[in-house]
Image (tube, rainbow, N blue to C red; front, side):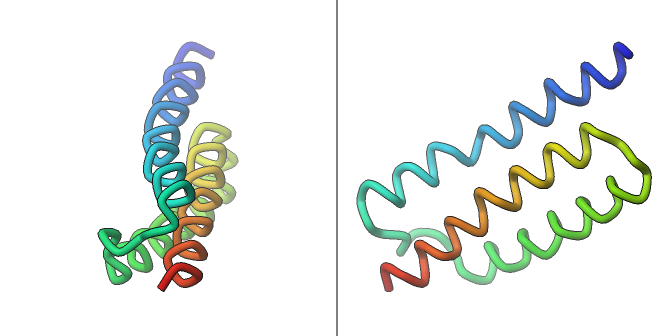
Length: 83
C-alpha cells in the first residue's frame, strides 16, 4: 500500500510538470519552442509505458502515463494548430 502511494505521488508530480507547458502553449497560442521530434518520440515512449503499466496492472504507472499522454497529445495538437 505504501509503495503504491509513493508511486501515485511520483506520478502526480511528474505528470503535473507538463501543465505549465500546456497552459503556456494554450495562452500564447505558440508552440514554436517545443520540438516536434522530441514531442513525438516522448509520446511514443509514454504510450509504451502505458501499455507496460496495463500489462503489469500497476495503477501508478497507468495513471501517470495516461495523464501524461493526454497532456502531451494536447500539446502536439496545439503545436500543429498554431503552426
